[in-house]
Image (cartoon, rainbow, N blue to C red; front, top):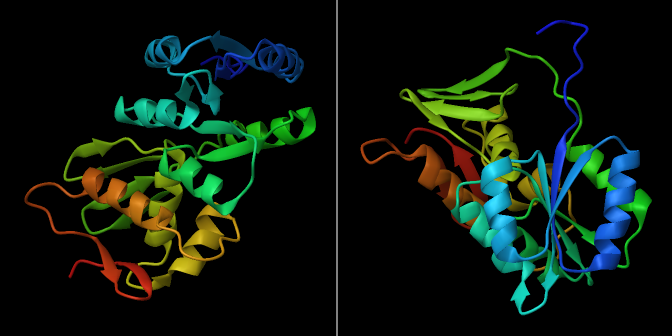
Length: 231
């Protein structure tokens, strides 16, 4: 690519039925330099997400007769790895857990605040740094530039949180990482009480990185946490 050629601005897909919310998002994203597409229904959102493969997907939890949580699950089931932000009206532990278990990477609170929203967006759409650095553990490798994994010649697409979880474990091979350490370093949230978010994402990763005839690499240490090891 010519060094003088500017990269196209990141594309953001909004899945929302609220005209007021989409009007605010359109104006603020345009001023911040992003390209935005709007889907007015869950079905349209899924179709556009498959076609556009946007850099970021923003979903309103309230979508008429359908929950934004269901939309997040459908997007992940369709194999889309774009970061997903979910707009929520409440910030309870149960809401955060539901958000993450549905496949969303993060959330924003309503009523809408432009500064808070754009700060979260920038976190996920920061310009990528060119790097050939890779983490390796046996036949598993993680490319930090492309944010993809590979094992025995298979390329493994990862969502943002799957990548961050796998990266954290690969940075500490053979070390038992507690659930609190994983929550703090991967999610950055102060979860209180019981949460099975980590278990959900470990299951996602195992389904992707462990083939039929391959050893399970992410081991459960009961009552403590998880460790990346071969046996």
